[in-house]
Image 1 (cartoon, rainbow, N blue to C red):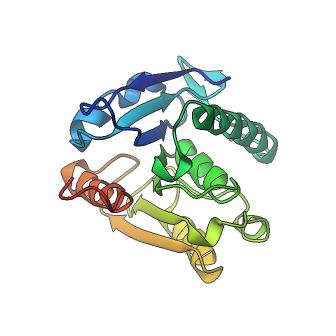
Image 2 (image 1 turned 135 degrees about the vertical axis):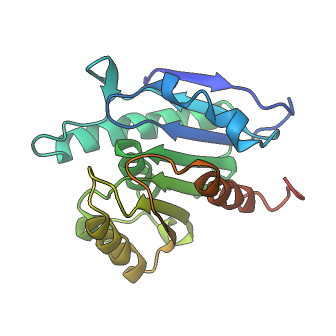
Length: 211
């Protein structure tokens, strides 16, 4: 099982959960700021470490060669994590699944293949593994998933134009993708981007009035 850390909501009875996957070389520690920054007292958080050690952090897959075997292995591990969360009383429809960079790729990969609908999917500054193949292998509930994908026009690591084209493939397949461009590099663009993410996440829980 993947290493993770659960951060409880301020509202103790809440079963709403945001799972966050880090990027290459990062770890759980890189996202401990997120719960306070999001400012959603009814949200629990689960920060997850990728399976492979990488220069003091972790990696979801080997980006230097064929990424597919590593993506498939991490997808299986994340399916197991989600199955475990379900046994602990976290309904998938109450889970927002998100990630940055490699974590973004894994969030999209898992969300569109997992057989249960999420509250929402948040992909930040990442890309899609084999998008043409992915849209041929969608889960039965994939067309009901809500996706937010953000990217920076100045990203030097994952070219903006390539990601936008991948997103267009997802949209053409009928997937519900909310796409936002930011003038940023390979990072989260401060409060402006956080507000977009916050509003998207909040919208996935219609029973929350005013969040």
